[in-house]
Each structure stands twice: as structure tokens, then as C-alpha cells.
Amino acid sequence: MAARTLVITGAASGFGLEFARLAAQRGDNVVMADVEAAALDRAAAEIAASGVAVLAQCVDVSRADQVAALAAATEARFGAPHWVFNNAGVGAGGLLWEHTIEDWSWLLGVNLMGVVHGVRAFTPLMLARAAAEPDYRGCIINTASMAGLLSAPLMGAYNVSKHGVVTLTETLYQDLKLVTSQISAAVLCPYFVPTGISHSERNRPGQFANATPRTLSQQVAQMQSEKAVASGKVSAATLAARVFAELEEGRFYLFSHPHALGNVATRMQDIIEQRNPTDPFAERPEIGAALRARLSGGDR
Image 1 (tube, rainbow, N blue to C red):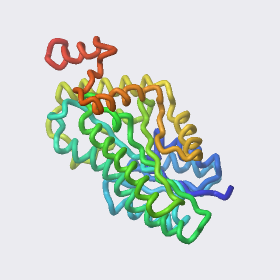
Image 2: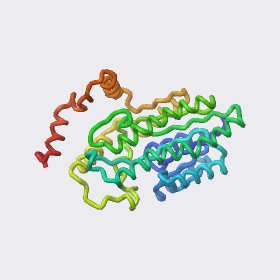
Image 3: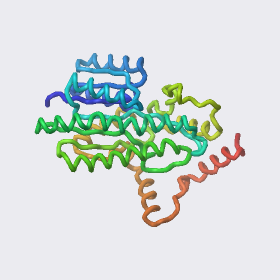
Image 4: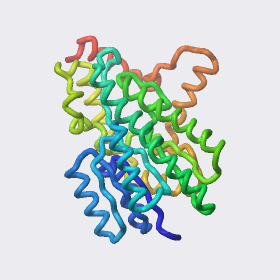
């Protein structure tokens, strides 16, 4: 198979770096974008050392102009890409009403608008190539989360951003089907996988910094996130290999923990039966009780 071109945002760590490693193993051209310049340099050097062609560009995906520049650089070097992974993401938690405007702007800017910018920048290039090359096949893969299919407490802004990515990608899939059979879309919904997502604050731009200390709920949410992510049993490398295999099969929904879909089924049944949302701690009531005690000041 001739070398394909993959574009990966958030490519310096986590899923993005594992996608790049797999692409390199296949001999593909790899376009790597990340907001962390030093980490990107290290990651790009690693991938280039395998002998494949690499284009690395420091990109803040919340900036439409920077994503457009990435698309232009990709086309100039390799032509329109075959797979685009809109993968960059950040996380923050706490009670919904305690999210600051800065929290909302940062999370939605990266997690949701970053995907919007990627879709707007790369889809026209891919459609043009598809029109010119009957054998061309492309796919746009957007990283959402199981948080995009559920509504867990203490994750409000993150949930909203990832629900947005899910519906955006489902709509993209349907829209593409109206105009081409050569390009598709897929959405990745990982659960708890050990990556750097729980330490996203390292990349928060100064203009989105919070002027006040973190609230109790935000501290609790941070501790929960770090514990859950670190305890994940599926590695980023394992998930990346699964994603590549399932993309080759033409799958749309990509999961790290398919067994967790029972929670999604419960949510859907709540909607269908018009019943109130099920208690997320119904099977582990002690966790809910501990959280309520902590947030009410009963366990400090």
C-alpha cells in the first residue's frame, strides 16, 4: 500500500503520539500538531527517526487561523491528507455553576471549536482530492469521550464540549454521505485511559487563567480525575491499535471500554421512558455519599 498522510493534533503525547507511532510503523507521512513546542519537538524527532516523512507545527487548535495554516502546510507538503485526527483536548471539573467564563472559553475553544476548525480546514481539501482521484479514500476522526455520551456530575463544561463533538461528528458523517462515497467520519469515545488529560492546566493560556483559587468542588474533581485516569487498565497504545484496526473496518463509533456502554443504554432508556436521570452512583452508593459529604463540608 502506498504511503498515506495522517494529520494528528495533540500529537506530542497520549493518543496523538500513539497514533503517530502507529502511522510511522506503517510507513505513512505524519503531520504532527501540538500546542506544547518542546514536547512536539521531542515527539517529532522520535517519529522522524523511524524514517518516515514528518511535518511538525506548533498549533493552538482553538485558533482558526493556526488550524488553517496547518492545513495549508499539509497540502503544500503532502497534498490533502487521508486521515485527520482532530484529537487535541483539555479537561477541567467542578460544580457546573462554579466554572468560570475562562473555564468555558478554554474548554470549548480547544475541545469543540478545535474540532470545528479542523473540519472546516481539511474537509474541502479532502473533497477536492476525492473529486480528482477516484481511488482516494479519506476519514476525519474526532476525539470525543464517553463524557460525550453521558452526563456525569462535576464535569459540566467538559461534558458539554464532548457532547458537542459527538453530535458534530454524527452530522459530519451524514453530511459527507450526501456528497461523496470516498470520505467518511468517525468519533472516538475513550473512557479512563492513562494520558495527560488530567494535567491539562499546564497548557492553559494566560488569558484563560482563573483569577481566584480553585473551589472545593474543583479540587475534588481534580483528585477524582487524576485517580480515575491513572487507574485506567487500557493503555493509549492499546487503544490506538484498536482504533486503527476499526477504522480500516469502516467503524464509526470507536470505544476504549465497550462494556461501559451499559451506562449509555441506561441514559438512553431514561430519555425514551421519560424518566428522570438515573443516579450515576446507583451501583456504588458509597461513592455518592462520600462526595456529598465532602462537598457539603462534612468531610474536609
